[in-house]
Each structure stands twice: as C-alpha cells, then as structure tokens.
Figure 1 (cartoon, rainbow, N blue to C red):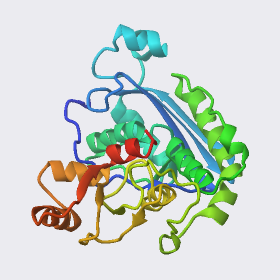
Figure 2: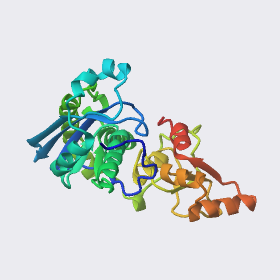
Figure 3: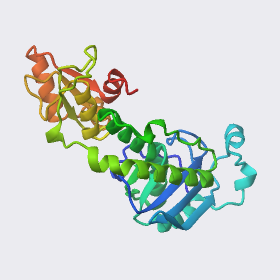
Length: 302
C-alpha cells in the first residue's frame, strides 16, 4: 500500500503554468481528504480528454485513502469511508490516470492545489515528477481582465460570472470546460490584438490616479510571478504611471520579488537584481524591495 506521509516540498520539475488556449487538452478535477496538499490524500479524480473542443474520452475513479475520511469531509463531499472501502488504491489508479492524460496540457481550477496534489501523487507512486504543463482558468481570466482594463475595452467579459463549482469532480470537469470555452471565445481576440510587447510599454496615461503608490516610480521585477505573467504585471504598473526597467540601477525605486523568488530569498538565496538593490540601499539610495503580495495589494489587485 502506498503511504502518503512524505510530501514533496520543492516541486522544481512541475510543468509550466500557461496563459493561452489550446485545441488538445485534458480537463482535470479532484477531491481530497484535506484542503492542504501537504496533509490530504486524493479520494476522487475525474478527467475528460478534448480534441478540437470535443470530448473524446473520460476518466473517473474513487480512490481508497490510507487514512479514514473525516466526518467533515464526508459531509462536505458526500464521499464516505463506506463508499471507498472497495475502491482501488492510489498506486492502482494513478498509472491509469497518467496513461489517460499522456503529455496533454491540463486545464484545471485552483491549479496550485490540484497540480500539487497530482505532482505529489506521481512522485510517491513512480518516484518521478508530473511534468505536464497546465492552465489555471482563474489565472487566465485575471490575465484577460488586465488587458481589458488596460485598454478600457467594452466586452462581455466585464460581466462574466463563473459558475459555482461543486465538490463532485465529475461535475466540475464539465464546469471547467465550459468556462475555458467561454474564455476562449472572448479571450482570443484580446490576446491577438491587445497584448503589448514589453518594448512597446508606454507609461503615459491621462487617466492615471495621482494618488497611486507607483506613479513615476522606476520598477524592476525579479523571479516568476504567481498571479500574472511579467508582461501583464508590467501593464498594470504602466497604467498606474510607473516606468518599467529591466535591470536595477541607481534610478530604480522599487524591486518586486516574484513569489518563487521571494520564497528562495527567505531561504537564503538571492537573485543578482536583489543583491544589487541591497547594495544600493547600503549606499543610501531609496530602493524599496517588496514581495508580489504587497505589489498586488498596493495596486488594488488583492
């Protein structure tokens, strides 16, 4: 029986989080014994394979965990210990799941949770990482909304409301697919016409709020952002009247650490940009170093 007591804390081989639309993919949803992927186990997994946006195959299993399901999770999900008492184990189901998804891009919601659960399961069963790239539909929608706001576009996406998801993965797969299709229909014209190349970013704007924190600041990013691509985050700052720099100089006012870089920095590792910013601070320069969460809060995106 596969034991789930050891968790992967450093998922360095995880696939890329993508911001685009594809014709071939698998939609995935799971249910677990705990919301924390460091503690819980997968007890249900559902997936549908799509080609040209038509479902061509389905996958669905309940999984017997190594520890009893709590009464809270039983009430929340409807999955009881009795329901899974005769279900296959993770080590039996996961090879079938990997065969099903193959090398497809995975479409999911709350990707950090779902992908991390799947990544850990893969390392525990096969001692190798799950490397499939993936799309988080909520991250994708935030990215598209950034483009809409930056260009003051009148689009139906402004009033788009996502359906409420359930605790039934087989239903959530259908909901996620419908959301992805809706975003595709609204989003492809935006991505085609309105994504600004970094070299063409323009900080001039008649509608800039003179009270915002980033006005006339020279800003540099280091590390991978969790909520946006660097280009999308740059567009947020440009609309706020900031100037984007690609390296830390004496003119730099703010260095923003992407979530992954911030985590590395708190563990002792620092990027060259971070070290340069600290050198300038020691020399008496006014350089502010902030994490991604602080940036989003000050930009009113959190």
